[in-house]
Length: 232
Image 1 (cartoon, rainbow, N blue to C red):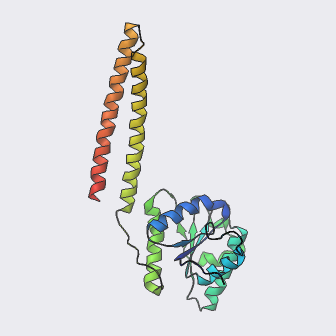
Image 2: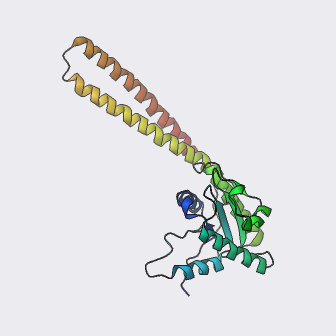
Image 3: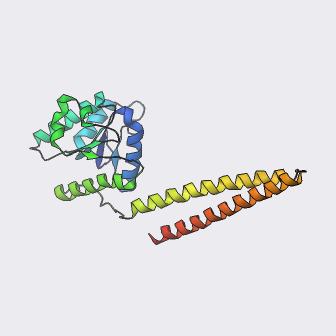
């Protein structure tokens, strides 16, 4: 048997939704949840099917993602295996949490998996929002607390994480806008060195002044955002 890395949550998904699952996995990891995602788990020469089922045998919590592309063939096999384990354990373990990705409908669920409709689906509407991902963190914490899942580190959940992420994005966007204005100003400066027409020169100076004012305003906004960030 191949030695499996410890993990907290198995991420069952359709490979067509891989990009979305990567985003979710990264954010869960930042929240302290160790995830099992197929990519990066298998090394060259590995018996990947064997390793997959070994991981499924160790799974205590599984997030089942339903996307607009429906359920993938291996995802179907994974959830069947986990569900059979759940029934065999007298509905104790593993816990399966069905999750709808943005735009997905429960109608995308094949009829053979209708038993999942008996479980409350979690709906994700915007993967860029930390508040959305925090739903999954909270669910995991509740399961961990209720069932005392072993070998799981306590998650350090920061209630301000959503605000922090939004402010960081605002800072990044504002800096890009400021950099764009700097480039425009530099172009004008180069043109001013070669301009001959007086009217054109005056027009360029006015545009330069306008862009400089806008850039100063953006720089002030960045300072205010950074001050807010420092308080969180």
